Length: 299
Image (tube, rainbow, N blue to C red):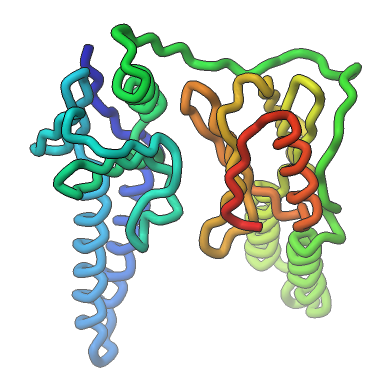
């Protein structure tokens, strides 16, 4: 059997498009400017775009895995030459050190990294490596784990959450929104359609951005549940027995997050800016008591 990687439509192609449009916008802005040295800045942005695209594409080559080895771009490696395989963990390098990846060390000391974020079928690739290469199974079977949709009203749930308003994230969100609304209201001339539209759009954007960072968690004897303080319709329910690993994750300029890696190697990341360190540490103790592996990379 052979599996070929498929680049993710949103996390790869859409992200690449947006970032290139941003570089293009700034380069055009400087090229049409009459300011001294503005054109030089335009060329700098073009150069930055070229470097970024090179790194982006170099870190996400086409990957083919089978029972003999792995092909990365045009280079072929064989499983017999591998020394160590780390199926989950963080990637390598300054830009990609925060990304989840599978790392394979070979006898010639070369390291292959397969970054989850770039590939739509990374769980299938990881499962193949885990079953066929690590566990030496003669057959490969991939079954995607589905989230539970049961009513948990009668479950004894332990909740880990901060305050949606009086936490640091809540104060930062509502404080800025109230400030932006209050300042224009002091000037009657600003109460026109365009200023009101701009203020409303900013407040909505700021609310949605910070609400996306306001998840909280519940644990019962059988389930792990993800909810959101503001998006009340969000409710993701995992069976504890389906969870392979939980990661306390943090990326630059973002609040702490929880990443759930299921046994099919699918993973989802939930920002939880209202939780304090004591909540995270207490939850880690509860999870480990339930025999769930917790990789703490942020607290």
